[in-house]
Length: 102
Image (cartoon, rainbow, N blue to C red):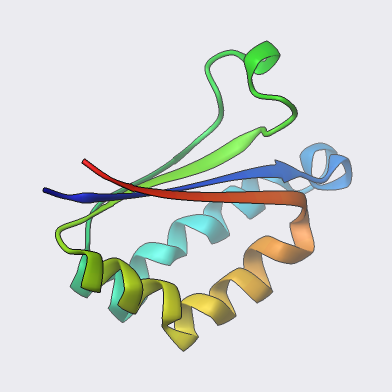
């Protein structure tokens, strides 16, 4: 069994029109966090294939963890929380996180 963590965001229109590439590059630095290196098996950011089905969510994270404990460590990690506060939250209008076991 593995654990999947999905985050969908609605990137602000201002960011989409000015600074979108920089925003995406900053999101990629999530890989550099020690907790990510320690706990994440797979991590991928990307836009939806079909905007019409995405209900306004225009960028997302897909990540896989070996254990539930690893996902919980990641979720509660201070560096991860700081990453979200600095890089994600100021640039989006909405966030949806969804976790499940496979």
